[in-house]
Each structure stands twice: as C-alpha cells, then as structure tokens.
Image (tube, rainbow over all chains, first blue to last red; front, side, top):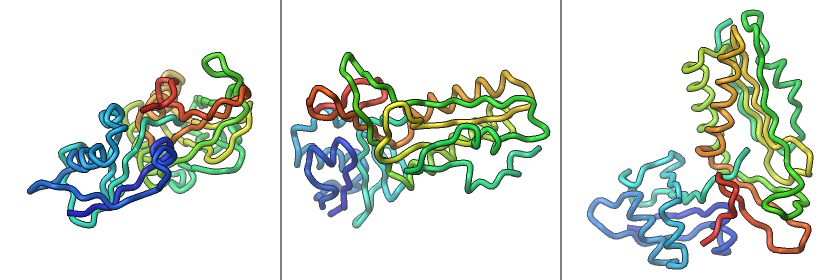
Length: 82
Length: 153
C-alpha cells in the first residue's frame, strides 16, 4: 500500500523534501507501520522515530490507528511552540 | 456570561502579525468575570549560552488550530473559565517580541491563574508548532524541542 507522507520543520529540512510516497506493508497497516516504513527508508532517523507524533488525514493518531490506501500521513517532530 | 458569547473564530489565531496582549485581555473580558490573567511569551536573546538573533515559527496550521481549540475548550470546562483566547506567531519573530499570548477570564482569580498556566504548559507539549533559532556565532540554526534542547538525529 502507498501513502503520502509529509514532513515538517526539522524533518523537512534534514530530508530536503516536504513529502514523499512510501510503501507500507502488512495486512492492516497502521500509523506505527508508516513510521517503520519511514525508518526503513531513512535509517538515520531511527533514534528520533519514538518521539515523532503522527497525524493521519489531519487528525493526531496513535501508532495503532488504521491507515488506508492513499491516506495523508504527517510526521511531526518534537514541538517547540510557546 | 457563557463561554459561547465570544465568537469562536477570533479566540484561536495563528498569525504573522505582532501580538497585542491588551487586545486579548479585552477579548476575554466579561461582566461576569472578576479576573483576567494573561501570559505573554517573549523571544529571548540567549539560549544555552548562545546569543540568539531571531526565531522562526512554523505550524501544521489545520492541526495546530484544532489542538488549540480543544485545549481552550478543555481549560474552560476544567477550570470553569468564562473565556479563553490563544494567539501564536508564525514566521520570523524578532527578539523581545511576543511569540505567544494567552488570556483567560473567570469569576475569581484562582481559576484564571490555573487555567492560563495549564494552557501554556499544554501548548508547549501538544500543539504542532515548531521553533527555529538563529544564532549570532554563525553556527547552524537549531529547531528547539519542548525540553529546550535542539532536536537532533
């Protein structure tokens, strides 16, 4: 299954891109599987993966949240507002 | 008196324009509220021993607005506030300018202090807004996380 993954702030700058298509495997792919696919594609971010928040179709989602074909997934690095 | 009196559309704002704390205090004022507490977060000229020249904020705007609305509603309910408003800057913010202003009103002061404190603490940890600091020593800018440390891989 293919999902559109969008990067923000620190992630976008380090990767040099705003988004990409990632292949996600498994029978019932979830947000955690998208993070795993991201780390497979970019292993240098393995240590940061645990501190990423994930949004699926513009809703904050836990790692167990379902992700459907064609979903928009945003990977959100640690926040710095205030 | 009810929280719903203030238009929801102007109580949560992400903006590139300078913030006006007095305007937010007026926005949350109400004949039934005996207390208004506001918090103003200012950009500092130093961080971890380095001189900071300026900051840039960015957000996942749809999500950030929605989270701020959720936090506002939670604070109103939990602390019995009359109204609450949260404005946050985006883009370049010069040293000494306000990056965030929160104003809340309540019948009595304790709820307003507690609600305002809750909102700034929750904003820092749960709203997708990011801050990039630019330094005077010529080193690369850092994205700063909720603990104040640079985000790194």
